[in-house]
Length: 330
Image (cartoon, rainbow, N blue to C red; front, side, top):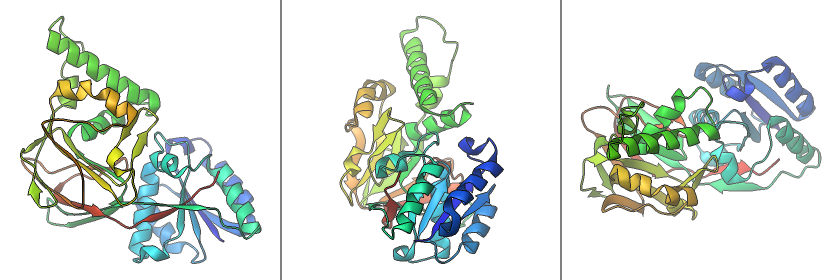
């Protein structure tokens, strides 16, 4: 075993004294690994190129987005997924849905100590294989788009939710609750016309549909107005508040959602989202599938993949991606 730790200095949890944090991690690793710091995607790209080829276990000290970028930079460097190192997400981000799914516990220092103990004993930790999405498309300017990810909100309420979440000064579990409560309250005030809402337009923005042609396994979804336009490689627990993609809980199953839902129907099904049950609607396609193709209408897509936004996409194809090894430590 040889351990690499990549510290994302832009992650909120690393905003304190980054020098001291990295020094502590280097002290923990000793001869068993190396620590690198990044402040941008360009720096991450250089770090990945400089990683010691002996690295077998690669820790992403950031949130879900940091792990997403690290996996994709490794993918650019090492084409064969079978040759990728084993990844380890840390906790302390705003959502940490990958760590929660893989049952990885603790912050970077706890994980580093566990990995060093495993290396010293020559007993690598247990691993879990997570399914992923392969996302291939064409940008509005004609450039190619390629990513590997775990969860996609290409449009609809999932995408609008992250719009609002990104604007919150303190993202996290409480911010998610604030968004839900504010949306329901604003919608109720408008629908019942009891009073003019002091948050006029909040719910209207949240429930604004995305215009697109969508095909799932070759069949066109019979609407071009989508309040749900999502895909998941596994069932996702968002900060222990919302549980989405229940149909992807079995290995190898992708969960696709596309179609039209009235705002009142979305609100009525909040208990199902909290409990991790399937949502339903007459004009909603909520299925397991092999391929989803999304063709933007009016405006290019600005999808959220693992919490990261990628604007300016004209066409996106979603299929099963490579299985990703995650070490279960902490």
